[in-house]
Length: 116
Length: 111
Image 1: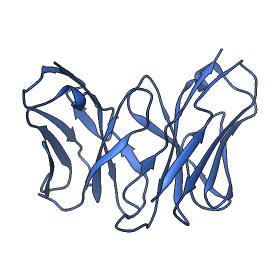
Image 2: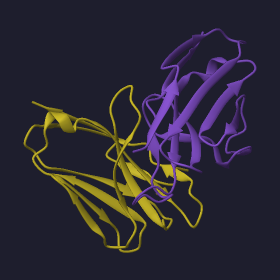
Image 3: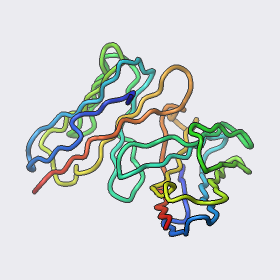
Image 4: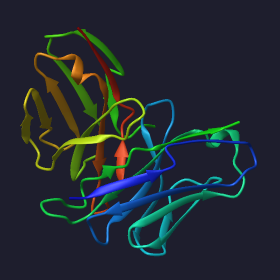
């Protein structure tokens, strides 16, 4: 079976500090990987997605960047955090596994980021 | 402009009642997913519908995809407190695999 991990679970950072959030997937190969941000417990905004190692597509211009150094590892980064970067960050994967197709996305437990 | 409109935004009902929540768009989707999310956790996939007019049942939950694949509904029979959560619909347009999410319906089922 497939599992997805995110860490840290919670993070409190000062404005202007760097950020690194990590996401790893187990039990599947060549997944599509996604980073979302959710504000105020409502809809999800797609930030980045990746269809392979080193391939990153950005959906929203912002203070963040993403990297995929390995097939099942996805990293969200920032050089200098802003107050507006606070939120709930979710990583997701999709792919061919068993009866699954790329239509379905499966989410990690999320990281709650507070920028002070 | 929100591509997927969910209604109602908030719904508070008593245990045992039935309810329906809606997900509407002016665009056609190749597939549509429903997720449930509890506070502080990631969304959990409930169902995927891909065929216009398709109906899927998951215990007390019934999902329907509109004939034109522009809208969907989720009906819950005899709601229970465990059904409380944020219900999100999300769709894929065309051949890309990017999900577009609605803002969700926050359901509270009171015992």
